[in-house]
Image (cartoon, one colour):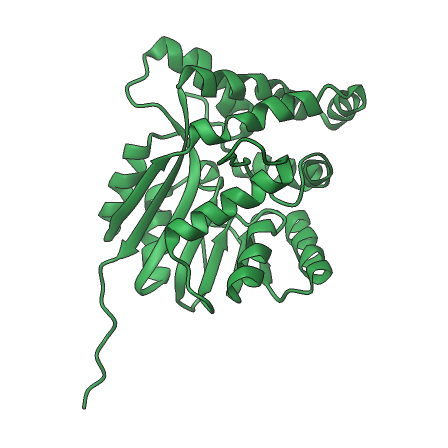
Length: 280
């Protein structure tokens, strides 16, 4: 089988096109969430971050690791809204530089590091390990969830939103509706059940799961409208075949949402460990 989430291709892709993503979509590198349907795309991006934060129960002053932080939108939101001490990591040096510039513009203190999520070398512990739309890029999810559990303080929370395939897809539906997404977006899609199994195996307790697909599908109506600009396609041609494949996969994303083959889901899990009681 083809492997689409090749790490070298992912770094090359995000280094090359992240500035164009931001100019087209906004400060957050993820889907929008439309709780009422009246939100602008920028409001919907913030609404998704806010929705995960509320489901997580983030407390003021929390220490948070944002894994796959993109160009910093969620990290900056969490630092500003919750006075959180946030560390964002990304595999892309270009994204890390963009995130630092965005934090400076927002006058918010956030630490952004270039670091591979397959090898997180941080020594500190976190109240929350947070990730939006990154884990489907990772090459070893089992090892990532084990490391995430190690990085949590007692009682800490893993909060994620990611891309999934529907359970029990036929081979024909998988080939026609999921493979084009994986090829264009440089991901490998598991099911939500696959993730919850791995998370439980890491020692964490699942406290919430939710299918957000219906409230987020509008993302691809907007994106398909945005890429009608011919100059963007010329840029894609200049950048190479992979960027063209990426733009062509936008229609596959919309079809995946419409058919139900693609699932956009949220999982929140918590450490079972209790804080140590000081000895008298």
